[in-house]
Image (cartoon, rainbow, N blue to C red; front, side):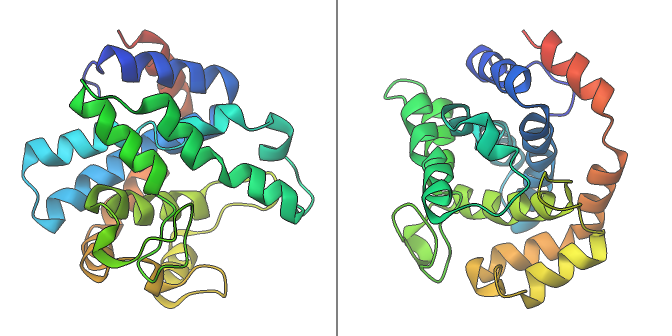
Length: 214
């Protein structure tokens, strides 16, 4: 997947995301690379893993419908602001959902459900267990890892070891119970690959690569 031309719809929306918010765009691409490794470790075949990774590139596309000042706010968010940011899941589904393109349909499903938690504490629909699509559950743990490591407006990014400790032990906000056990285990097994993907990611190459995709 890395370096290959993207399907045109994914490429176009990925460019739009980059032009609006570089941090969201780079997070999406790194997460997708980690998703592929986790999917393979979970036992999915190469094509399934590739398709989930490609579809996952757009998991946060719904944030283009959220005011940019909220995404970049350094102060704590109000309850109303948090609720507005959470609408990005359903907005992403509305942007991506397709009845004729299976890859875009998968992207829409991931966008809608990647913040659902295995214990039922997530959003937007409070799904639990196997009611959450497997692709979204894979994306959930990879998304969480990269988000913890990425510098955000309201806090600096964490070191790999600190991010892993939160995913595997919890910190009061993130809990191991949020993730499907076998998916969490598969991610743990590829965590050194995840570290390498994050640490080696070249932002300049990301920008030129996204803008060059067909």
